[in-house]
Amino acid sequence: MAKRFYKYFPWLFIAVELLFIFILLGLLTWANSGVVFFSSGFWFDLGLLGLVWVMVVWVRKDYKLARTSVYWDTLKQFLVSYVWGVLVFFILREHLSFSDANKLDFYLYPLALFLVGFFRVAVHMALRRYRISGRNYRKAVILGKNEWSSQLARTLIKNKAYGIKLLGFFDDKVLDNQVLGDFDSFFNSFGIGSLDIVYLSQEMPSKLVQRIVDHADEHHFKVKIIPGPALQWNKKLTFSSYGQFVVVNLNEIPLDRLGNQIFKRVFDVIFSLFVIVFVFSWLMPIIAFLIKLESRGPVFFFQKRTGVNNKEFTCIKFRTMFENPFSDTLQASKDDPRVTRVGKVLRRFSLDELPQFINVLKNDMSVVGPRPHTVPMNEDFKQRLEKYNNRHCIKPGITGLAQVLGYRGEIINHWQIKSRVKLDYFYVRNWSFLLDIKIVLKTLNQMFRAGETAY
Picture 1 (cartoon, one colour):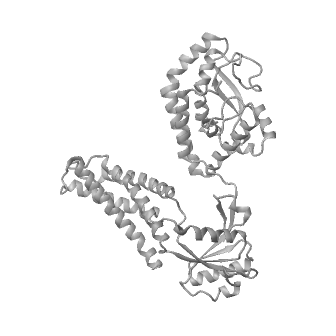
Picture 2 (cartoon, rainbow, N blue to C red):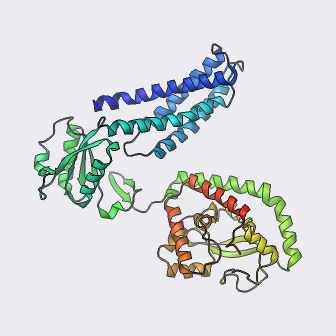
Picture 3 (spheres, rainbow, N blue to C red):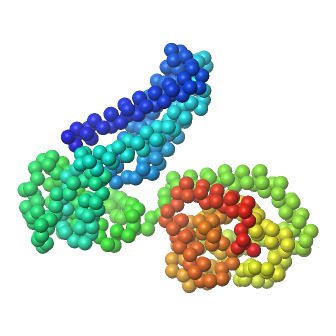
């Protein structure tokens, strides 16, 4: 039954999803204008959209809803396919459509495809319920019983939605009611097709592992290794291949990947150009005039700060203080006499940071990232705080996770900088484009409300 399910499910998934799209598009078209369902333009668009969507789903393997995936994983997979589907469809539609007559309104196609996301989540939910009911399960055994393999067993038994039925353990040393036999007896216990997955303890001898893998290839089941305590703490392990040799990457971060770097850089450039052209260009002369009107000195303040890989760069800000020799070593405090009246307003609304978008275009900074500290402060914190230097493996940002969660302004207590570093560490390890967008939106919201700790 399970084999037939996996054989036919992809076709069933695509067919039902395609039918769902056609029904949606028909209903939206009817509700919008009651358009002619028998027009050549309607059927041409319908056929082209269906063909494009089937190709995208098949190439990206959207029908593979992993047993251990969550609903957000399904949505992320869908959103990428959605973008590809809409782009390819409209490009082909413009070049292949023979007439503009009876074409449907532009927005109906992306709207119909967008609603497919809800369908995907519903299918995912239905599969989980189906597996919880005891159907569509895979049979599994664990070889080697220890703390971590026992924990895996408890996880599989507790989470029935994974659809993995654990038959028991095999072990040479442990004997209890969960152990089905020793390692040698394992090879005679299951015939072809009667087992789906074998989990191996990391402590298994290499020769025995190779024997099990050979046996698995012959009898058509999958083999998975249970990482020991040295690897269990890292939930996002990746692998690197050197020919036939494979190693585990223990501390790879999302922004180590070239695609993510390019994506973040494109966003930085576009967002910075938008701010410079539509905000900085007209606001800068006003701020410059007010700064010069109140005090002598330059409009801009240039300061050495620590950037990616501990390289120093020149950070640009609007000058908010009277010129003084302590700007690099002494933080601004409440009612600080060095801060000008204009400077207080600029700092309160974070407008003094606007010139840093030039730093972003120069590739010294990013829009979002750990806030850069002055070089002397950086050296001090590096000595006092564990994992502090981890924040320098990516570019510093104009705003950051720590800042939007309230950790900004003067550092009075040790726990304040410690909390900042923890949040910076979390951001570095869990970066995503969606997280950047959330931080930017929260920053804009806080700017309009004015930060009480920014002085």
